[in-house]
Length: 343
Ligand code: CP3
Image 1: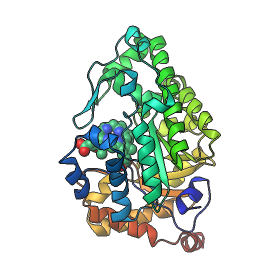
Image 2 (image 1 turned 30 degrees about the vertical axis):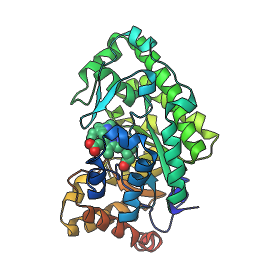
Image 3 (image 1 turned 30 degrees about the horizontal axis):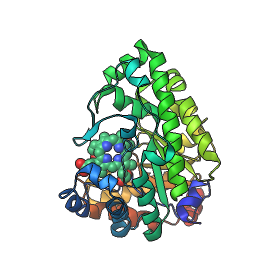
């Protein structure tokens, strides 16, 4: 087993495993060099490139897990949806009617993204650390599909949920089935853990989450249970949803930086906590990074902890600063620290 998988399964590890949300991407010059020659979709759909980009942060930074280079939008085009990136996802014809939702195809497991299976196999041959596969949670995918792209308040989407909840449920149901097929395929190809990104779930109240997110996330986690890989979940700005999230059948919950880990643990009983350094800290001087990284590590001593950022790394981040954070995590002995803190 590895440090990452041990901690994901709930073990108090001697040191915290560390990886970073959005660790493969634009803050790395070696990513930008590839990006100059290929479009984002080309990078995703060429297994050799996806493998190379996945491994870039593993080589440069020594993280304890790799995350597949793809996007949460990857499985959607075979449904009949036209998506481009600028730099975030742009949906050519946002879904605004029940007819459009009914017309969406549900592709078979093998046709969703064969290039992802290929990329996973290549990564598994080369990666010294476990590979995390991932997908977008149905509510977060629906947010983009109905809104049409990123937005400050996602007003169109939130209006749709109220005007036509039935059509919204029909869409969420299709996205759930698609995700089960897509994520099962990833595990069968070799992914050793699965993270479900519910980035925009925090926009909603707990009753809305209970109706439009939880049952669908639960179906995905239940379908993955048979594979015996750890299941990770992240929602951002979602502390008000922890009582609901705690009921999800997953092993790890990623939390943002807004609350300290020790304050959240009792609400997420028996889950491994992943997080929660504010990604803005990596823009600070190295002394600040050392200090804040140690603070998060101490706050995480109450149980199983995977060190991560509270959300994606900023593209302005100096890779040396990220490396400094990772080295700080690696030099922190949790067993010794726990003894000191308890005395
Ligand atoms: O390193 C990794 O984490 C693996 C690759 C990965 C990407 N997107 C590549 C990407 C992962 C895990 C994602 C997930 C993703 N995509 C999420 C969930 C995580 C989160 O941050 O909340 C969301 C909401 C998206 C949608 C998306 N795709 C956005 C908002 C953007 C905009 C640009 C950005 O960097 O935030 C994208 C494009 C995208 N996806 C890029 C990358 C590397 C940038 C493409 C470029 O180089 O221009």
